[in-house]
Image (cartoon, rainbow, N blue to C red):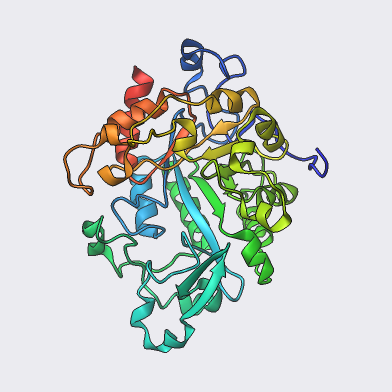
Length: 381
C-alpha cells in the first residue's frame, strides 16, 4: 500500500492476545474452538474471547476514573480501555469526550463559568465545557461524575470521589499493578477526534507515542492496543510506534471523520468488505466494529443472522474486538430484554453467548464481571 510503514508487526503477532492460529482463522467452529486460549507471543497471553473493560467497570463506577479502572482490574478484566483527549497545555487525559459537561462537576465551579462555550466537533455543534480550554492543573480541580445518572443512579454514590486521570497517571498505575500482580496490565487506548484536535494544534499521536516509549509500551509485543475511529490516526500511530493497532468501525452508513475532511467517499460499509479489510490490514492488526456489524438487528430490534465480517477479517489476519455489551435492557437486543424496565438487567449472558459464537476475539463490556463469567462458560463449552 502507498505510504505503508515498514515496521509494522506481523498481522497475527499481536501483543500476546491468544489470537487464533492460522489454521483456525476462517475455519469452522470446531477448528476455531481448538485455537482458543493458545498463548500468544507477547508479554502475558490474553484468552479468547478477551473481556475489555469499557472505560473501566463503567457499569459500576463513573467512567474513566481510577476507581473504574481499578474495579475492572480487580474483577479480572483482561484489558482496560482509555479514551484520550488533550488539555490546553498538551497533556492527555482520560475522558470519553472533550465535552466534560456531563462527566465532571465543572458546572459547579463559578471560576470556570466563562469557559462555557459552543464548539463544532466532527460536524456536531456542542455547548458546554471542553478539555482543550483547561490546563491539566485546572482540570485537576474538578471531580468526575456519572455520565448517565438516570440509567445508573447507583453510580452517583461515587460522584466527586475521583479526579479526571491523566494518561500518564494511568500508565503509572498500570505499572504498579503489573508489578504487584506479576503480570502486565493490558490497555486499549483510543485517540478521540484526532483530526479536530490536530486542527487546534493539539495533535494526539505524537504525545501518545512519547508516553508509550517512556513506559515501554511502544513495541509490537507491548500489552497495549491503540485504536481510533479515524484510520488516518491509526496509520499515523503506526509510523511512530510498533504497538498493535485497531481501526474502530461505527454504523455501516457512517464515514470516518478524516474521510469526510479529505473527501474520501468510502463508508464503513466499504471498509468491512474483503477489499476494505485488506486495506486496513496494511496498517492495523485488528478492527473494533460495532456489534451490529457482526450480527445486525432486525426492524423489531431482535438479532438477525451473523454477517461474514468475522470470517472475512480473520482471513486477513485481523482480530475483532467489537463494542459494547451492557447489561441493561435498553442496550440489549430485543430478544434478550427481560421485563419492561429499560434500566433493569436483561439476559446479558444469552447475548454474550450469541456474540461469542460468531468467533470474535474479544468484546467491550461496561460490566466486565458478567462478560468474564460468560467468556469462561463459553470456553468451557
